[in-house]
Image (cartoon, helix red, strand yellow):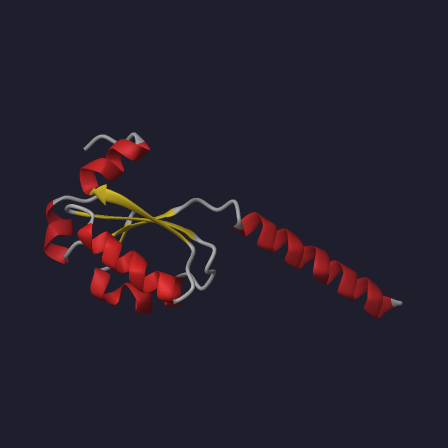
Length: 110
């Protein structure tokens, strides 16, 4: 009986953990170069070069259901990052366009 109760508690705990993860805030990633990011950035956002995106995202966000928004100067590098992550099984990938557009979408002023 004790094992059944432990399994039940563990199952409930895991279900609660995974259901709470689905409500996590989206992750915003600046895929511009370090120099571009140092000139202008959005505080709190990650900066990962589009060329390193798969390695870093897989390491930091193994949940393929995580919601991501990418931005750069025009949206081109974001498309490259999104294509690479789709090949790795990530699903909730959004191109926010430029850093200015990312600010507008979030109601952030410079």
